[in-house]
Image: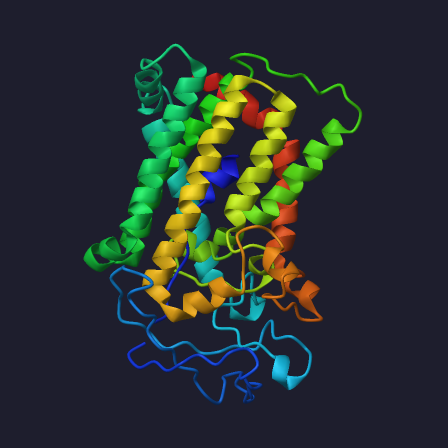
Length: 370
């Protein structure tokens, strides 16, 4: 839950002045590449009719088609990828200085967060929790209220991203976005940890054989869906200029909104294990927030990318595997290679680490008396 709340945020840009009709998959031909790995031609796009999407559109940059993810079948069945290759990470393109900056920024952020919000002697976190808790004696109501406050601020700022970046720039807006969202996320997480066994016990399934294993595996899988927005950590920390990405490969082939799917899996697993009214309240709030986030994310991508997003939308699905099963998504023969990448290996290590660090996380949260 900690990672899902802290790191769930929308995607990034590329758009054009001149557009033409996108060829259908069977009309698309193979893309030739030079030794520089740049395509020999560009594929322009036609602005999607405004009657379908009554949203204001920004000037669009040109897309460069890429070959990653094309089906390795006959030429007539090849599909042009108009989005970006997710989880791509090449060590040769990394700058040591960028990661040094990232480490420094992370340290500064954690220090400021502790002083300004977490430390009860100097921060405002406890006062915030006490104010929200004064609404009701019911931990379920307080849990829902904290989640709602976070959701409004987080999704509200995400909706204002285009305007905000125009006014203060991409990096400054990312700092503002994180600076407001992060303390609220920490408060929501800490309250859940400290009050997760309050409320009314609805069921008790912990002693049933296989339940622990089912919950553990479900949580492990959920983090592979929850993490796609963090593939560009340097952008998350504003070391690199933040962009709004139109991902199309990897886990996006399974579901267009992996964070929603991951959050649903996480919530169902934790609610099954804890089995009380507070867990249900937390799950209802988080799933509701992510359902809105999925709708809002599609809306914002439609505004930013126009018909290019429609192409991706038409061959992906929100429900996992639906587009694959009905034939809209054509998996390449080497699809598994889209997951054998450093970001996914990092997710595996971090997920295992988070599991074994649960006692430390719980102890730290209890000491806050939130």
